[in-house]
Amino acid sequence: MKHFKFVLGTKPNHSQDIESMSIMKRSVERQLVQSQMEDAQKRANDLELEMQTLTNVIQKKEETNLQLQSELQSQRQLIKMEMRHQMATLLGSLSFSTSNAPSNKVSCIIIYSFINISISLHF
Image 1 (tube, helix red, strand yellow):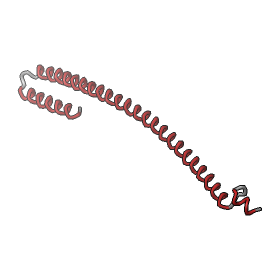
Image 2 (cartoon, rainbow, N blue to C red):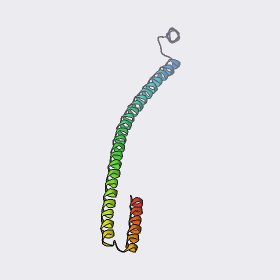
Image 3 (tube, rainbow, N blue to C red):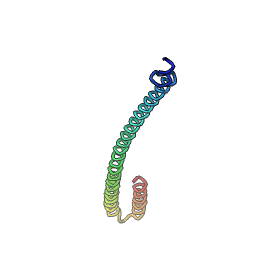
Image 4 (tube, rainbow, N blue to C red):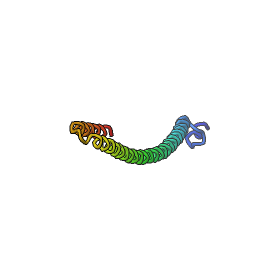
């Protein structure tokens, strides 16, 4: 009777147990791989969002930096112009007071040239 149950398939045999366990193992492995894929996709999406956020921050900082550089350059130009104007005024007043002394005029011109070069190198 046992032999007939085995042959007719009503009694499970060892190979059927192994096959059933193998199917279950593959199903669990597939679920694990699927879960890992979903986690990896979520991490990739999170990293993409973080990258976009950082790109926006960098872009804003670059724009601010360019604006500040432009403002700094404008301020430097204004300072240069003001210094040159003050030096010209100072040298003009010195040249009027020393109109009879040619050596003082040459000294004033040398000082003016030196200061002008100094201003150009400084800014």
